[in-house]
Length: 245
Image 1: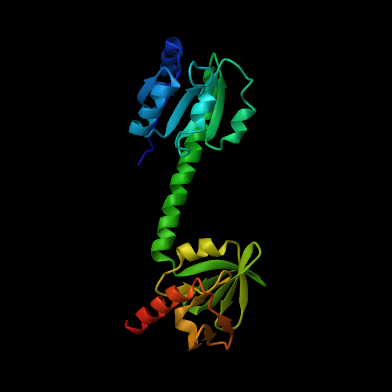
Image 2: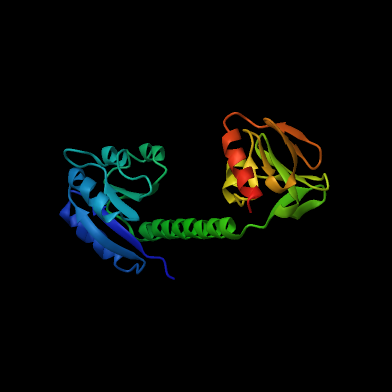
């Protein structure tokens, strides 16, 4: 399916609207869903239309474009259009700004900017699809071992342990691998019925539990861990649910 981006133009100059409309008319992935001539009116327009892209003038009466940027939805990609280059440095404060076009807008620079926007949008969409697919059917992960990358099946994993900027993945044959992600990230991908977090640093496989003693859990490799106070209620709930399956 071809990507389509809806956009809004905010500029107090009527001629600037017309000029921009002519320039972007050649790009079939862009569709205008609204325009207005001051930042105050833009607030309700953006809330209603929820565009993917915003062409925003900076110097406007009443409320400037920079002031509007601080209150709008940060998921909207913004291309700044201005007669001055004085605001270019300020735009680095806003990660959703994807371009800065100085008026009069040159077609070549607009083309390059929109190419970057399209690439960014396609990349984001692809990442969302990949993440959804991983979460839906994750059965293995690619990790770093002593001999390079290796596939580890989740059914063989005993635990995940956070170590600074990476994770130790411990398999049931006592081999340990490195996985480049945060514990929060891996937790979002793991099947919730198979793994449970027991403290700030460790996620264990429910199927690899050997014994439970009050607030401690012993795994099949005889490792013994304390279940954190903030995690024990969730752990007990998950473990009891497994017993009834």
